[in-house]
Length: 319
Image 1 (cartoon, helix red, strand yellow):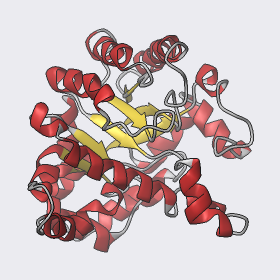
Image 2 (cartoon, rainbow, N blue to C red):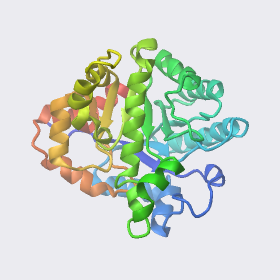
Image 3 (cartoon, rainbow, N blue to C red):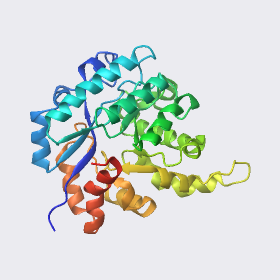
């Protein structure tokens, strides 16, 4: 058998018009080498994919994307960004696919943009970054997005963004001067996004839209490790009955983005099954080569390795 194709599912870029709306000095301030790679959706990106052995990147906008824009501004910004991204995908001749940016502050417009991006632009789903102007995406006002995703049979990727300012102040402020990454990839992103995953399960959105597909990165933001305990605790007296663990394992897929830990991956395989895990790097925040080399070494059989590297992505995203 030949070497399996490699599809990387959470690979970011920066649209200059979307970035124009970001506040200066926040987490969007990137160092020069990182910004160069975020801005490049061409030769540099393709060369680094080739050097690492990555066949396809599924492109998505970097956080916070359009989740901080208001309901009036966001629809046009997201639409134009998605149009520009489609041109990059077409120019790549099969090397790039894409997740749409959605104007979540306007849920009806976001659902319509998701449909347009999938049916007209050929996108494979959408990515939502953290809170929408301070609101979790499980709130009922956002359910039209999930209804449309289910009807289109495409996934929504729930990606981290900076925590709510009140959380930053209460949980992280004391250590941010020496450890600024504590509020982001080191821990804050995980807590915020795992909380969102839990809230989605508890909200009833999967009862309303059975078959809805959600992706979470970074090996599920630690939730696969905690599923048994969450399920057990929610089964105690006083809680509304909910099949939490079963619901999560039925509706969620997870990716390896930025979490190249063999023990953590094995935990996820045991909890979720190899069919629910997809390869990702988290480029350019994480370089390509370590992720590909790691997958060559993990103690999995060839069938499971092929599923994670590309087979599951081909089935889930219809590539």
